[in-house]
Length: 135
Image (cartoon, rainbow, N blue to C red; front, side, top):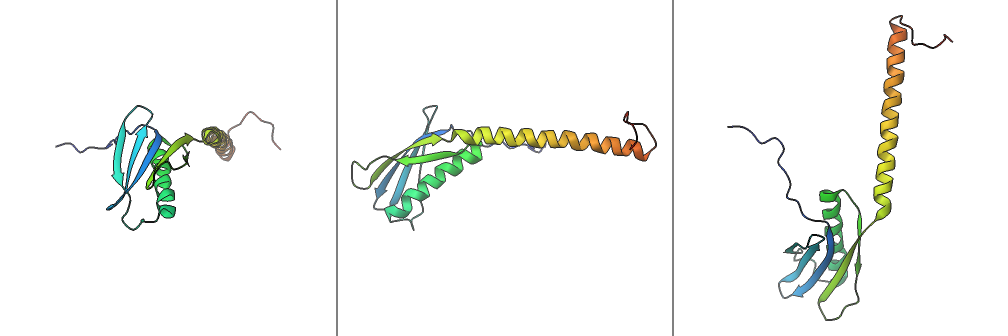
């Protein structure tokens, strides 16, 4: 029997909104994604205070976007329309992607430079010419 090497994570769409509802059993949430899908769940039962539940729900959505999509998002809560009910909009942070691409480009450039210098050093060590004049 063959082993599964690369177990694929389930693909959730990038979150675009969250609904947080207070119930007698605790906080329930529904996260809507950009493709029109939704998943639901609940927050820990220790988070009864809304001042603690809202940041916990926002953190959950931020971690979901980071872990599954490699992007940062912010959650902005809409003004409350009814007691014990909140809705939030999930907004991708555009600077994160540009910063990540810049950092990756710098790492690749350093790796190329490192290989070039390592190759030249090894050639000098073994008495081969690198095409440069001696110093």
